[in-house]
Length: 114
Length: 113
Image (tube, rainbow over all chains, first blue to last red; front, side):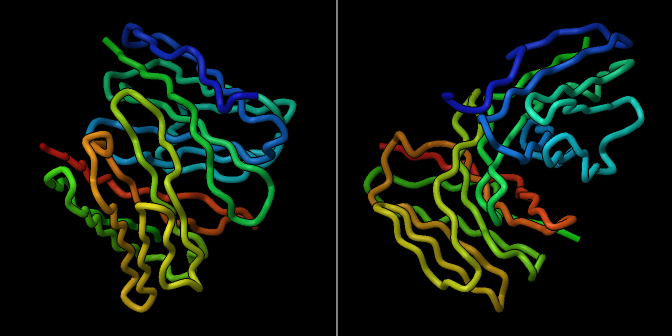
């Protein structure tokens, strides 16, 4: 296992289309995070899973966004009816279930909505 | 709430020391982190400090924590051109027994010859 894997690396979509991103965390990492990063900003927290349970959602996660982690392993983030403002880098991170260890990040999926 | 502030840019000459500063708001943060992001890449953890520590040294990196002022700094000794990147300070806030990292906007470090 070489780290957190995200697919695709890049996605260009037309406004109004739906997109889905996948994240494969490091094996046996119970915690999984999704962040969004726009140009000149730090990563903004979107949502957090502990195993298959989605325990925390940011106000940034509008009704058009949904995330799942059905078996407690990989996770998907879907954006419905994409808008130009959704263009960003979507980062996934995972960490083991030990008190307060660092999150390991994937390379991200860059979304461009045209 | 959680808020992390950093200056946006720092320019240094190769071989000098760099000091990147950060302030945070959540006094309950138990760990504070420094991440590095190179262009087109994800975030890489550089170092972290536990909140009951004042200082941590790791090779060329020195982290100083002033918990009273909620101020964190990262010093890079003998800065090299390969250190040019964006550096993010992160604190963690507790949610339902877990800890969620919250990031600043990042400091762009530019190292010139």
